[in-house]
Structure formats: structure tokens, C-alpha cells
Image (cartoon, rainbow, N blue to C red; front, side, top):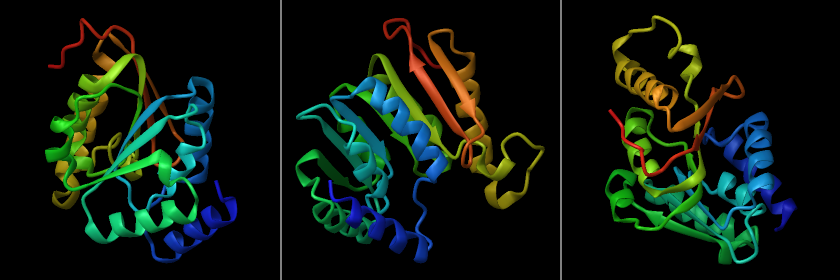
Length: 203
């Protein structure tokens, strides 16, 4: 991986106000990936490819990261960035809406990282659980959403996102077949281990 290019990609994204993974969040995710050494990672929400490039460093030899981005311009920029960072052979971009793409994916993943439309998190969870291997890890970023999720926030603009994030947290914390930690890093990070795949059902 070309670290110099990675720093440039990060700098440009921040200058253009493109949301990318925060440093402290990345540190936590990197630690998990280091321990697991995954063969297959799925990322829901590519943006310009910064996090995918970072995560690809921890893949097992011949490992693959699949990432989904619905914004055509960002997906195109991600392709350019991935090539510049010299990790093209490790990353596969699906361009389109994750709600449509996820049901078409049939493989199992060691790690699934969710960082896309907040209002769709319960749907993403359902699909992630279907595709996760037993003892696989599902990581969701921004689950505390500027503190709104744990407060009595109820303004119309963000109401759906907040309600669905609350539902996501309820599902990952109340299911006996899942083991979940919610960390106050970045904008809230939920780390869920899939303990018993066979018995997994969502409400």
C-alpha cells in the first residue's frame, strides 16, 4: 500500500467535507482486523475509498474487500484512489444502492462494516447477519449519531434516522446470540460478534 497516497486521499476528503472514518474509530477497527486477519470484508458505504484502503492492509494474503457505494461520482473517485494506493487487486466496488445490492450477495464474510444511510441500519443488520460467518464481526459506525440516539431528541429532520438507529441498537443488544459492545469513539461504534448463527432470528 502507498501510505503517501493514503494521506493525500484523507487530506482531500477532509478538505471537501466528505465523511470518512475518524482516526480514533479507525484505530479500534484496525485492532480488530489485526486480530482476525480476515479473508473477506464487506463494507457498506465506500465514500471515496479511504476506509476500504485502510482496512485492506489487514486482509489475509489473497483476501478480498467488497464495498458498496450508491453515489456514482464517489464510486468513481474511490476507484481512482484505490488504484493510486496500489490496492486495486484487493478491493471490489459494487456501484449502486446497498438496499438492492445486498440481497444479491451470497457469500460469507468475516467482518462487515456498516457506514451508510442511518435510516437503513436495521435492514443492513438483517443482511449482515445473513452473510456473517459464525463468530464473524459486524461493526457499525455513527450509531450514537451526534448524541441524538441516547437523548430524547425527536426533531422531524432526523427522526427516522434516530428511530432506526435506536432499533439497530436494541436488536444487537437484546439478541442472546449476539455479543455487542458500544464504544463512545468517534460518533459511536457498535461491535457485534455473531455467536450462534443457526439460532439467529431478528424480531
